[in-house]
Length: 255
Ligand code: ADP
Ligand code: MG
Image 1 (tube, rainbow, N blue to C red):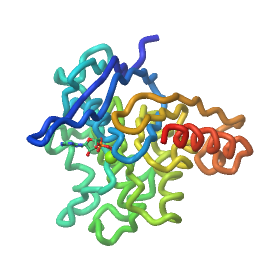
Image 2 (cartoon, rainbow, N blue to C red):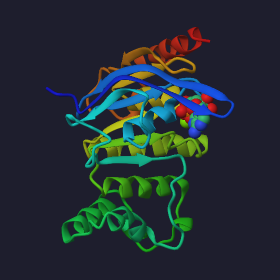
Image 3 (cartoon, helix red, strand yellow):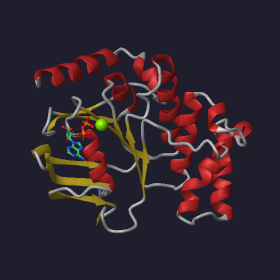
Image 4 (tube, rainbow, N blue to C red):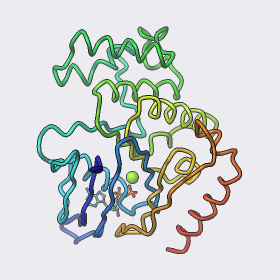
């Protein structure tokens, strides 16, 4: 089976008046349809740069990004991006925020509206359809942001530290919430995080990057011996600690 996404020998340096910063060096990996990948690595190792390259916003100096068999920079790559800040607009209610992406892309149809209504209902936001973002909790705002992204029916979801602005308690429940929605909707996702627990509890595979310039240090397959895996059940399982120690050791061996 062809992988959904293929990265081949990606390298990139930023050039400025004062010199050159080699950000990424020779990154190759593949992602299968429906897989959840987490990328971890020290601050500044090039994680956000890598997501920008995957999305096609930034062109690598060497290498190729292939999505569904074609280069991402060609038109038609449908990729959803979710960031630390939810970027909801206060002057629009929840429904109009969720509709925004489709509106910009001129893709509002009776079907797409129905899909949105359905998601708002499934994920407990129907009552808040006409609420302003400021009336919602941080967790609910992230849920709205996710539904807005999913409304575009992306082939691939990129998440750049989406929970890191939340306090610890909220973060755990939002991680479970968002992880559950992504699984239910059978989306393929790549999550960048510096939180090892988040990576282990959500991902099928964790890619560990070295310090800058980011190279692949190791790819760890996460396999919990359980049915109907959820982030919470994963955190409470006996294997969790072993994965945590393994990733911790890999990250610290590099320093
Ligand atoms: P991470 O997300 O892993 O923290 P980034 O991808 O944001 O890392 O950045 C990788 C390296 O590239 C860092 O050293 C950063 O300072 C540098 N960098 C990021 N963006 C730019 C830019 N636009 N111009 C120059 N250097 C940059
Ligand atoms: Mg970053």
